Length: 223
Image 1 (cartoon, helix red, strand yellow):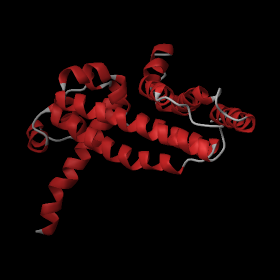
Image 2 (image 1 turned 90 degrees about the vertical axis):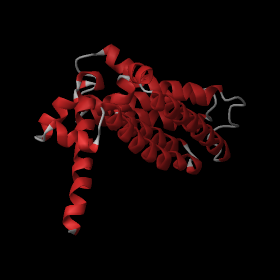
Image 3 (image 1 turned 30 degrees about the horizontal axis):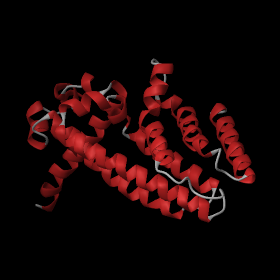
Image 4 (image 1 turned 90 degrees about the horizontal axis):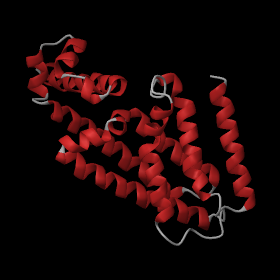
């Protein structure tokens, strides 16, 4: 009996895993529930038993994303130097990459899903608070003389985080969102987010940031 009770949960998780893979690969608007059930080799009725509508699948994936994001944003409080900041921003980009369908099709998704609209707004606010905490930590760690006085820098960072993959896609629609392009795209994104701090960083911290960016760029080029 215990094994029978676990089976629906495993099926539901598997449906989400495959849906995320397909959404990321083809874009949410281009993936139907029929295609998902075919990929899973299950009947459409079995899929609907777990997720009665496509929005249910989207909402479940958004819930997963929010949980992972919430856990990650807490790490901003521990940032004290440029290397910490680089790692934190890179981890944010890695999470965004894992759920890139949200960012690839963001405007379309928001126009169709009211729940996503409100949840994504909360996610943006959470990112802005975390990035401001990162700036405060860099100031306490003396990587810069003081944190920027307004929220404009942290909000500008959120803008780059949110639309970086769209920018990459416009630059190279055929390859930008393919897995083999991920490392280079995320490294570029992390650098451009942190480059907003260049006017505020102490000279040694600025040099360290440029060295980190160069090392990651070289590493990505050799993969």
